[in-house]
Image (cartoon, rainbow, N blue to C red; front, side, top):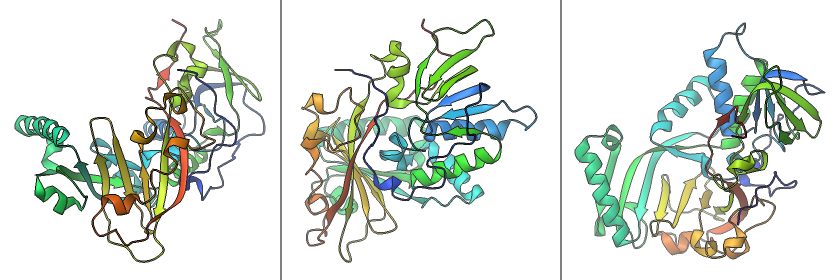
Length: 358
């Protein structure tokens, strides 16, 4: 099933959107500009990153006019719902530098990730690949550490661990980061229009080389269109419906009513090649836990080809109950419970400029 659709009104509130900022329903101008140099569709991480790069690499006098159109509120799609809060490898240095240099208040923590394998076969395959990377001298492996067998359970604290890898990682509050980036962009002249869904993009350019975007509030013409639309791309570009397929995912927030064992690393718990969960400990003592694929993946109609983020995936509703007690040593009597649970939609997310019907 693949039924691309536009963002639905009334998406579930995720934990990441419990503290909305003053840009949540922002409109830089009362009316849409009739013509701009660049239109970016979507106001999540991809759009914020593009804006930040353009502003850093152009002078005010040479800077193109840019309009950002968001169907709902700022950062209300995948960035504000899914596991964007955790990142590794190449992104760590860049995000760390940006947050520190710009003094971004986004609960940023530089830590270690513990990637735990719970299947002997999967651990063997991962280890074989890891050893090849070590032998090749790849730079990212120099900041990693690997443990096999019985030591993996002791090191990770995860029951039944067959092996684990650790490496430098970071986590943060994605909405707060994106809000900061858009605040800076607006101060430098970027026009943000929330609650303005794009309904169609012309299949061809006009005689002036411009595309026409039809929105709920009128038309805009532009020479360049950037689709930062993730799961919704196929709705505006039908030729991508079978290539960028949306799917639903689920996430939760786990808390305890009192003191609990220390958990200061991010985690991935891998049960097989395709089945894994992720955990992001927060400074307030709660833990963001997502995944649950094994609970719903066989009910294809409940997640595949869907952008419905207005309700929880029923098959996974109880998956996170007792999660910490089941999987982590020392948490058996913690009283950890699910404080919140929500659904988001996502997809592979290419950025497409000046796409045409061919």
